[in-house]
Length: 335
Image (tube, rainbow, N blue to C red; front, top):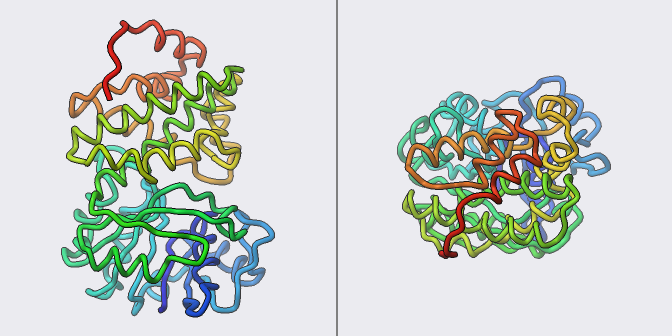
């Protein structure tokens, strides 16, 4: 199968690499890069600056031309960050086939509109394509995927055939894909875990220990499920790969960009300084504001999200935000 991947960051490049070497049935891949100069550099060197040392094979083409990237492709995987997805997909829709299965692998909530990527797709794309779209999530660091380290992820779609196609075409010997129809739950889990990963990094940056991290992960999971329930998700989804699985990975793994952001915040650096020094996107920074605003919109209490929001958006010192969080009125634990 010919597959396009939109977005040549670490994860997009990793997907193009592993899908091009699927045993027995490797795919012909086209990797789309937003910047023309970056596309040329990757095409010539066969390496991305985001994944140094990982060489792309001859079956992977790299282009800046969106028409060339997606035209005629039966499957298109979008790894464009949530803040840029609307613009790219609005352009790409004119080149997509009506039968194209669009797979979203980015994790975030659009700022301003507070839409999930499923809602953005429905707002931008032709109805048939939007209704058959699939959403990939779960614990999966790019650097581990390209090393062939076993992983399990999940795909969610309103269309059962799309789920099956993704499982059959994108699953590998070392990457197992489960399926669900709970698109809302999978998307919220994938987006919110980045926020809590920043929180875990803050705790580590402040010198706290395993007790604190365990509490943050557990209560973060509770907040995920609470907001998900408000928005119609199945709360059990958050006990799975897109919820607990991805939450544990990003809150504990040193490869997590969002956790690294939190570490620096805990050490006293400003968010502007941290983001300005990064060469990759940490989705959790923008998702924190979106999640905070979404909780307020629907009347859902998200105290950990709100505390992280105060640190990032209001410049409140991390230690002060933690102290205020712990001083909240005591209450019963409700799952």
